[in-house]
Length: 371
Image (cartoon, rainbow, N blue to C red; front, side):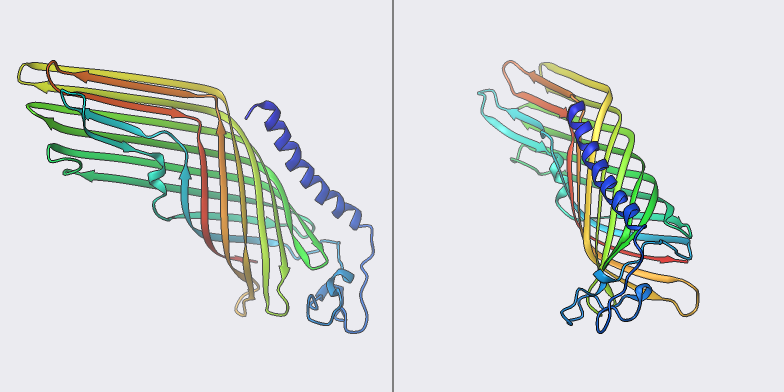
């Protein structure tokens, strides 16, 4: 993404936040009003009649904007089970016989890390003041590794194959939050600072025997981003009838700027009765003005329970989750290595590293407490 796209995204995110805040500020000048009869007859501070089958828009007539809360600390821990889908060209090693026919061609793709679900933690700790404003810190860490070790891969004359793919995506936030409560909807909007890192590596090595030649090849790529920027968030919840549960939606957008790097490495060698041949190639690219956009959304069900043994409320959440990470660093590093024997076998290794794009999707289960 170029600078214009970055500014456009920030403007859109900032515009959404501004609209919510302006609506809240305007609403604070409106005196709370209550419905009558079967609608909202429990009072503005205890509006429980939302969608209760009476045909009334109960809670929409019962609004309190003064944000007066008891305040206190709150904390939560979340287990996410996510699949990863990351872009990238595969690292490849190919072996060919003296006549140019392929003996074996192996590849190791970044997408291999997404073959299964990976459990990742998310933690948060915050403080809500007695008014509208609060502060919260948050940490998320996703790590996935896919490794293949097969000493019998390929044809009978292949001695072994090993591939290794690693992915890590983490972020840390510190945010100011503001409560809102309008009709049946309540929650908060937030604005703060985020630091994030996205690192991915892919490698493959192969050893083969072609006739009397021992052939080896290795290809590796590495892509990294580390940066800091702004993050915007929205958390909204709405009661589900009289079940005691809430539907909630949690959305976030972040724009970060920082350092990025990409490297590719390829090496080959052939050992024959008459001698040996080898080749090594390395390519690297760096950018101190890299950009990373992160979009996140959760939607699910939340249950709250007031503890009897302590002045606190516990909650449990179950949700679906999707994250989108897109880096635009303008980087591209490619390396190709070739070794051959005359007469004899040929081995070629190729690796390419460029910009990163990651999708994370799955489910999350969270539990927490507020005092």
